[in-house]
Structure formats: structure tokens, C-alpha cells
Length: 304
Ligand code: CP
Ligand code: NVA
Image 1 (tube, rainbow, N blue to C red):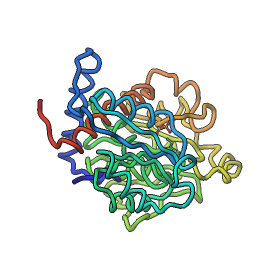
Image 2: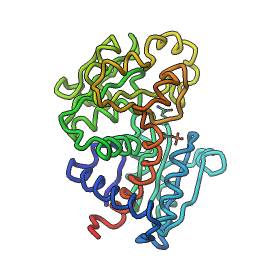
Image 3: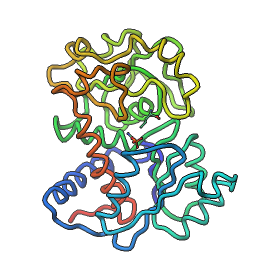
């Protein structure tokens, strides 16, 4: 049994399989061709943080594949009344076929997975957001071809998205440029090295964006860090992706943002709504990549 808790849980070959399947499943969806290999399968979704895209894409996705979803949160379940995550995992996983969790510490999804009888998907933690980077890389592959050997520029906060991009760079062999304000740099977390083979760190975001094939950013304050919002607004003021920054990137650059976006903070309205922006495609592709992911976790490699 496999889980998808971090991007690096899958090999390059497995990610490439997912991209191939995503293309097929997206084509079927767009052409109203029914494909329901997960009839009667049940997905439990556990949300300990807010969500729009993750909630809708998983729920619509499992339904389109023939299955159903149950939506759980900490307020209305016993999780909010301190039932241990291990006990919750043992109970839920006896009743459903697949679990997606959005929570705070990565360690919590790991403990859930250790006690689960069914595959577990990370729907965002403080440390990683693998489903989003899966959709982002697919979006690049769909529009520009292989990401291998390309350069991705990450501008702003060293957060769950940037650490997932770094894992993707290692697995899929591309270069990550990261520009963060002083005091908010990437750290070696969970024993992972910040190896210069895949990561180049910059203080000037313009330098990081130079020649990049993807320029991407995210909110200055991630969920769970709201108490730092005012300090972060000051620290990140020079880390807004604007037209000038996009102009130094590769001529075929794509702008990406996992959304929700704060226009006028991490990105200007002009860039977010401009011709290089693929943010709406990225959001849509969450649906398609996660359908391929659920198919893979439950049925293995399908080629039909
Ligand atoms: N990008 C993303 O995960 O969005 P939601 O928080 O709306 O799920
Ligand atoms: N880094 C953001 C991503 C939201 C989808 C957060 O964790 O809040």
C-alpha cells in the first residue's frame, strides 16, 4: 500500500505515469466520456484548515470516478475533542477506501498513515503541499513539455509550497531559484539538505527570476501563521511579482500561484491576470491530477 504524503514519496517514473494518466482522464472529462473505475469507493476528507480548491477538486474528482466523499473537520468530529490521531486513523480507515488530510504538522499525517489500513493523501500541511505541485508541474508539462533541466523561480516565503517545489526539483531534475527576505530563508527541515545541485538561493528576487521558465509565488502569510501577518507585510514588501520581474524571465515563462492570491501583495493584478499567468489552469488541473492520483493509489498502474 502506498501513501502520498510528500512529493518524493513517488519516483520520477511514478510521477510521469501520473502525468500520462492525467492527460487521458482530463480528455475524457472534457469530452463527457464517463470513466468510473472507483464505483462504490469512499474517500474521507479531513480538513483542519480552510479550503476551496482542495475540497472541491477531491469531492468532484472521486464522484466523477464513480465513488463518493465524506467531508470531516476538527470542529464537528472528535478530533477537536482530543481523540488521538492514531485512533481516528484506525477507525476511519476501516470504513473508507482512501483518506485525504489537510492539517498543521506533517508529523500528524505521518502518524495517521502509520495507523491507516488505506492510502493517505496529504492535502496540505505546514511543511508540504504535494497535490498542488503535482498540478503545477502537470500544467507546465501540458503547456511547455518536460520540466527536466528547466528553472523555476520561487519568490517570497519559504513555506510548504517552496519545500515541495524543492522535492520536485530533486525528483524531476530541474533547478529551483529561491528569493526570500532576510529572516525568512529556506532551512534544512526534516533532515533534508538544501543541496546546491537543485537549489540556488538569492537575496534579490530579480536575480532569481532571470531566465526562469516558471515564476511562482504564494501568500506572505500561510494558514496557521496569522499572528505574524503585520510583520510579514513589512518584511515582504519588495517581494511582489510584477511585470518588471516577469520581463527578465525566459520569453516563454509561465506565472504560477497556488491560490488564493492577494493582489497587490505577493503579485500584481497585471501579472495575475496577464497573458503569462496560468493560475486558473493550475487550479483546474488539481481535479485532473488528483483523479489520476486516486486511481493509482487504489488500482495501481492502469493503462486503459
Ligand atoms: N491551492 C489550494 O490548495 O487551495 P485551497 O486552500 O482553496 O484548497
Ligand atoms: N502556503 C499557503 C497555501 C494555501 C493553499 C498556506 O499554507 O496557507
